[in-house]
Length: 310
Image 1 (cartoon, one colour):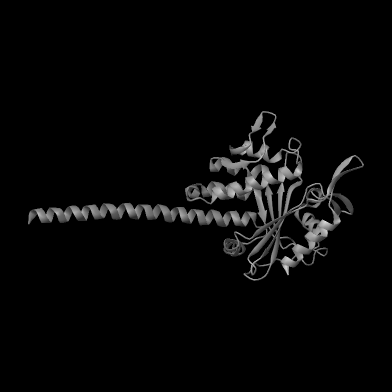
Image 2: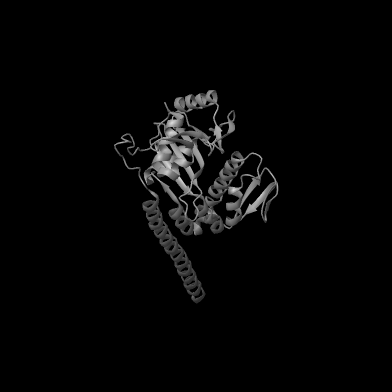
C-alpha cells in the first residue's frame, strides 16, 4: 500500500515537472511569437512606403493583390555608397498572372539608353533613380516597356547583404572563375560572407559578360539569402534579420498583400519564365557607353508582358 502511494506521488511529481517544463517552453515560445509579431509590425511600418499620387502621376493609386487580377512589380537593387544617392544597378520587372498561375521576370540592362521621364533627357536607365528616386524609375520603365507598374521593391544592396552574416553565410553555384583585388571566387560551389557577397555582386569589368554577368550574380545572392532565411533553423534569428530588412528595404506592398502574394507564389513555383534582352548591342555616344535594345526584340517583350497582364 505504502509502495503504491509512493509510486503515485512519484508519478505526480514527474507529471508536475513535465507540466512545468512544457509550460515554460510554451511561455518562451509565446513570448518569442509576441516579440516577433511586434518586430514584424514595426518592420512593416518602416518598409511600407506607398507611392504618392501627384498631378503628373494620377494613376499611381494603391492597388490590392487578389487571386484573379494580374499585377506587376519593379524590383530595384540600388548600390548606395557614401556621398552618392546611388543608381539602380539591378532592375527587374516581374509580372504575375494569378489565374494562369504564371510569372514572368525581365532583367533590364542598367546601361539601357532610353528617355528619362520627368527629367527631359535621354540617358542610361539606371540614372532615373539617381535623378528622381523610385517614382522616376517606375515612370521611365513604364515608358520603355509600355506597361503599368503596380508595385515596387527597393533594396539597398550594400546594407541588405549584412543579412548574410546574420545567416552565417550563404552558398551559391558560381559559373565562372573570377578575381577582384584580393578576392577570388573559383568556379563551382562557393560559400560567401556578407563582405565577400558584396564584392561578388559588384564585379563587372572582370566578367566578359559585363553587366549581364553581374545581374546573374546578384539574382543568385538574393535567391540564396531567401532560401536560407526560410529554413526552420533560422527562426531564432528572425528578429535580427527583420532589423536588417527594415533598414534596407522599401516597398508599397502591405502585410495583406504579402500574405496573398505568398499564397499565389506557392502555386506557380514551376511556372516562372525568365526574359532578357539579348539582341541589342553596346555603342559609344559622346564618350559614354550605352546598351541599345534591338527594336524588334523590345517590341516582342512589350507584347509578351502586355498579354500576360491582360
